[in-house]
Structures are given as C-alpha cells and as structure tokens.
Image (tube, rainbow, N blue to C red; front, side):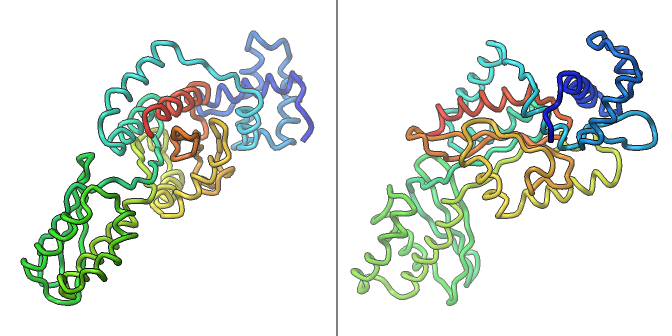
Length: 344
C-alpha cells in the first residue's frame, strides 16, 4: 500500500479517535466541523473514499459514516499513534502496588499484577507466569479411598499444592507414612526437578528398605506433581471488562470462543511465541494474532525477563479493538519494566 499523505493521515486519525471514544461511524459533516481541518465536506468525502478503497475504512451500513478496518487501526496504532506518557504519580502508584506484594509468592504477585493492569486499562489483564521449580519443604500423603491418594506438597515459599493420585492396589495408612517419610528424609529442600532426576537411583539402591507399593507410590507422586508445577501458567483477571460494550448476540458468541481458546493449552505457546523476539510492547489487532481472529479484540503484550535478560513471562491486556491505545501501551510497557525488577 502506498504511503498516506498528511491529509489522509489526519483524517484517518480523526476517524479512529472518534471511533475509540464513541464506537460510532463518522461522517464528512462531523469531520468538517473539526477546527484542525480546513476542508469542505466534499473534499473530506473524497479522502474518505480513497481510504475506503485502500482497505482502511469501511461503511457498516448505508449511512455516509465510516469506521476503521482492522488494517486501518493497525497502521494508525503502529505508525501514526502518539503515545501518552505516564505521569510520575502514575508510575509511583504502579511501582508501590507491585512492591507491596513483592514479598509474597511469585504467583500471588503476578495475580495482583493482572488485577492491577485490568483496573488501570479497563481491559482484561493477562500475565504469563514463569516456569517454577520450587524447593519442597514437606510432602504428605492422605488416603481418600483404597485406590486414591491425596498428595500434599508444602513449598518453602509457603505455597501448598494438592494433587490426586490413583494407585492400582489398595493402599494402607502405614504405606502412606513410609512413602512420605522416605521423601521428606531424603529429598526435602530440593526442587521437583532434582527429585525426578535422582529418585529412581535412590529407590534402586534401597530396594531392601522399600516394598513395591511404597516405591510405586513415591514415583507416582512425583511424576503426577512435576509436569504441571514446572509449566508456565496464564493468569487472566477482569474478563468482565470485555463484556462492557457488547450488546448483540454475535459479539457475545465471539467472546465465548475467545474465552474457550484462552483455556486451551497451546494458547500459552501462541502468546509466548508472539513476544519471544520482542524488544518491547507488541500490539496485535484482531486477526493479526490467530488467537483473536474474529473475536473483535486486540492484544497488547510485553515480555519481562530475569536477571540474565532471559524471557521468563509476559504481561498484557486483552481489550476491544477500540481500546484506548494511547493510555494502555505505556501502562503495559512500564509495568513490564517493574515486574522485571521484582520477579527473578
């Protein structure tokens, strides 16, 4: 597409600003009343016609008003948008809010961050939490039935995980105690990866001390608990914001498809892959990201890194395509910088 001239850029910008504020089509008469334009309605209509032919505007119905297409929004946001700066007070408030929770567990801090950016942006806040391989303080097994056991893991950071384990043979309280005592005496204070990597060797070396059921229970407990605890997870808060301006069944159905997609396992990889090579805030409007295709939503997301500058997660917002980009982009950019300081 040819580069827009200044007049076309100006008119496209005015239409998009109006759309973001009202969600309504904009006509040439409305634009002619703008003091920054010194054009007749006829001249404005000609420019709007050219923008429509270029795929940047469209007419939602037979009226003379126009709305921006996803392509028009994308070109405006990425090439023409002047982003607002956060005030010193806003920066201080974000830093203090995250700092207040910095001594909590990583997940608690990130859950608070998701709620924080949701409130500041009036969008759904999204945080991809890093892989965690935490040290174990204590393990306990509780019998629920003859073939079902509840494994309770207490971590040194205070977090507790409960997982169900199915066993092939009836299990007794004494076997549960033996399995718990074995793990606690031998491996407490190590990470789940350490346990997984060394447990088989210890069981082989101590076969005389362990019956088959105890050894099976120990291995089952670790294998069930390890995969989910060391995977990234996604924290989304404020989804109700996405419903604020929805009033037709078609839009509600689109959002339902989006909510379903956000619960699927490959969604994490889709989102992380979008920021792996990013140097800052990334913006995906509608179908620019396959996850948001046909949803009428945009994703603004930024990576955060560890002390070695390795990407460990991302924070962002999901909002309507007509969200306030000028305000939201600096919020995400600054918050990701603060999170990088506190999440290691």
